[in-house]
Image 1 (tube, rainbow, N blue to C red):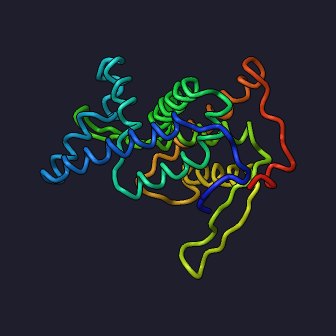
Image 2 (image 1 turned 30 degrees about the horizontal axis):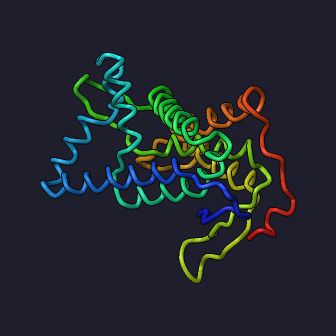
Length: 238
């Protein structure tokens, strides 16, 4: 299922969400300029900037922290970037509206960093020698955290989604947010524990980000401000 929007209009303009999308796009354009020098140049650049799981326990913690932070804005392909930014645009605005722009940014970075940590701890990467490179890149962990927060804050929202692969084998459906997000999370868990095979995806970063995103929203609802009340007539504003 591919989300394309949330039913109901919001008067809030999610400037920080748009800014994050723009920053990720600009960084990817820079990656393309590096790749123009040759694929090896891009690989070497990514290896020097992104979090290398095999460097954990070898490099100083401040260096690892900066590498993990930079990893959140690097992407391996155009499809990787577009998929992440679509999910961020669909779910980020409402979560930003609840937290406010700057709190949302801090939460986004926290989700991504903890997602990276979850990948380090549970991702199953085996490093046979210290110089081995096993980097993690992408905003997926941070965006998974946004989705976890959305699940707590807006479980009754309706997600417009495309189900299927391509015309005429897909159709548009309106799916409850709790169903869409729990399905997405369950699929990641099954892939993370190896019940469904996948390659090259840091599923534990998704799982870690999603869980911490849900918990942050839960505690924010207790100590910051209550979660938004469900508006049963919200869809009439479309």
